Length: 590
Image (cartoon, rainbow, N blue to C red; front, side, top):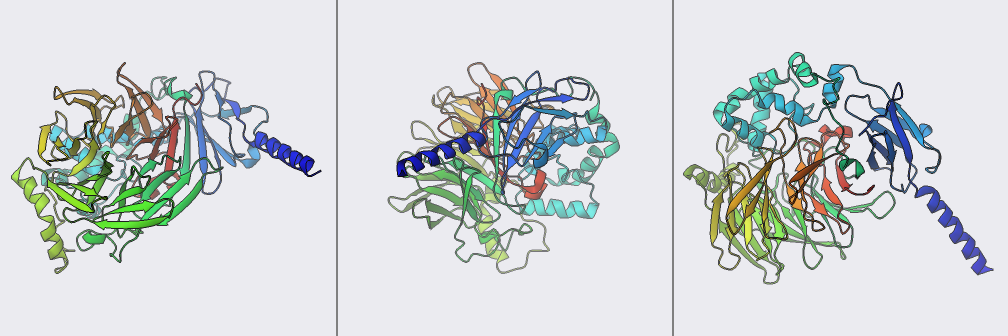
C-alpha cells in the first residue's frame, strides 16, 4: 500500500513537472499579417524576477526552451515597432497551450523610434562633433567609466552650474578631463542631444529595411536569461561562475556578495555582507572622494575570482584590502594591503597566489595566502606627470584627513595617472597587465618581479585575457576595437567591432571561451555581447533585452554559456531600475 501511494505521488510530481517544464511557441506578426523577424520575446516570472528571452526567425516564429514556471508577464520588442506588453491574463494558463499569436504595431513617431535606439547610437552624435581625435578618445575613455554614455539620463539638458557639479563629481570619482576638453563638454552635449537635431539625424531612413536590421541568424538561435540581483542603489560589478555551478557577484555600492543558484526554479538567491571593519562610507578614501547617493560602500568589493581551493576572493577597492569568502563555512577573512591603493582586478596563478592591479597608485600586487606574504611592484609611468599623479595620493589622503578639501578643486582634475587595470596569467606563468591611461601593456616575471612594458598601437587597453594558445587578447575601450598580441613576435593584430557608428562602442572586458576558443566581448555601450571567432575572423552581435546594459566582466559555465552582469552606475538608469545577472546560451536553439 505504501509503495502504491509513493508511486502515485511520484507520478503526480512528474505530471506537474511536465506541465511546467515545457516550451512556449508562437509567432510575431505586424498588423497586416507580415512576419516580424528578429523580435525579442521575453517571459518573466518570480519576485525578484527571472526573465527568459528568445528571438523570432524569418517567419516570425519563436520557441522558448522548457520554462520552469508559468510566466506572469511577457514582452515583445523590436526597434521600429511598439513594445507589446502582456500580463498573466493574456498568457496561456498552461505553457503547453496553443501557440501564441502576437501582433505588434509599427512605431511611426520618429522621437519614439529614436528612444528605442541603444545608447551608442546617440553617443555617436556627440563624438562626430569633436574634431580633435585626441579629445574624442579622451572623452570616451573618461566619460564612460561607470555608466553608458548616450542613455536618456546622460543626454538630459543641464545648466552651466549643473554641468560644473557633474564634471567635478566625475573628476573626484576618477574620470579626469583636460581643461580644454572640460570647457567644451557642456556645449558639445547640449548641441549633440538637442531634440530637434538629434531625432531627425538618428531616424533618417527609419522606414528602410536597413535602418535597424534583425540580428544575424546565428544570434537568433540564442537564449538570454536574466536574474534581478540588488536594487536601484546597487552597483552589480563583477561576477564569477563557481565550479559547483553557482554564480557569485559583488555589489560595490552596498558591500554585498551575492550568490545565485540558477539550477533552482526561479533562481535561489543569497547575500552576504562584506565586513567593513568599521571603515567610514568611502573607506580609506572617505575624506577625499564624495559618497554616491544612497550608497552603503565602506569597502567597495570590485573584482571576484574563484581560488584553486574553491574559495571566493574579491578586491575591496575602497577598503584597500583583499577578502576571502569560504562558501562552505560562509565566513570571511580580510587581508589589508601593505602597499598600494585601490586594489582592482585579481587573478590566481597555479600556485594559488593572488595577483592584482592597484589602480590608484600604479602598482601590481601579489599576495601568497600559504605564506601570508605580500609583495608590491611599482610600475613605470610613461611621463613624469603620470609618475607624480600616481605617487601623490598618499599625501592627498593624509592632508584630506586633516584639512577640509570639499570646496577645493577636484583632486587630479586635468591630471591623468597610468591606472593599472586588467591583469591575467600567461600559460607559462608570467603576469601581464594593462595601463589604461598610459596605453601600454606589460609583463612581470613572477619570480624576479622584473617588469617589461610594451606600447599598444591603440589607446585604453582594459581587461585582457589569454587564450589556450598563449596569445593575449585586449579590448581597446576608447576606440571600439579588440587586439591580439603574439608574445613571440611581439606583434599586434586588431579588429574594429562591427557596432555602428564605428567608435561608439566601449568594450570594457573580454574573455576567451574554453569550449571553442571564441572571444567574447562586452558591448558595454550598445546593450550587446559580441562573439569573435579567430579562425574565420567573423563577429556575431547578440542583442541583450534590457536597455542600458553596462557589462564589465565575462565568465563561462561548464556548458559553454556566457555569463555577465548589468553594472551601470547609477542602477536607476537601467530599464526597470533593476541590475541583473545575465546568462546567454549562444546555441540553445540550434
